[in-house]
Length: 276
Image (cartoon, rainbow, N blue to C red):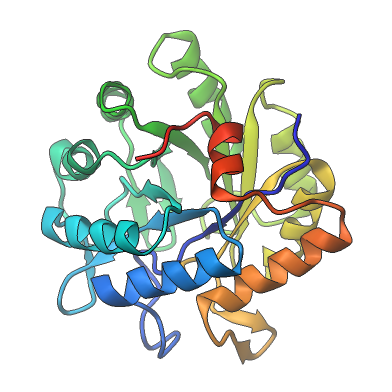
């Protein structure tokens, strides 16, 4: 297996606000510029959320089309669109799936189970997951199996066994969300031990778990996600200047751990996705 490290940036998310960070990119041009800067710094993939004109979470087809279009004009980075929506949104299955099918990013999130998420329930019904996986495959989009706890790994493996997902699978561990598994090295290693042997994986350490889990992933053959969706602090009490600053640090650390950073083309080959 390649030793190359895939760095994903999540610039915006659905929860972080301008109160958390005054420079959070919210609008299509801002998000596209932040993604471009992260691509220049070494990111090979961008996890994309969009907001409405008031900066609130959105699954607007128009906002996704504008944002994705602007990113594609600027750089060839792998686009991984969210299917999650956001806090306070009342969405149908189609609201969550249609932008992905229409815009055909290389990848999309497949949150493989429901979980308490802070003060809300993040619901992902099994029938919704089957529908999303089926329509994504028909559109040529590879799902990224997002796992907030170990049960979601098993859900993803079951969906593969039942024919809803094609291998090799790619997992994204999301640790540190209140209601999911804490962001500890012990939990990361436990989850890694449950993966299929041919799977690729990446990790998100929300908040203070960011650095320990990023370093562990680099040592253990995984990949990493950084950005203001998951953490606005560069170090304790110090806000990051930009999303790109997180990427730049990941690149420096990768060099220390002898993990050459994957280019976009190399990341596509590792993940088995085709260019758009």
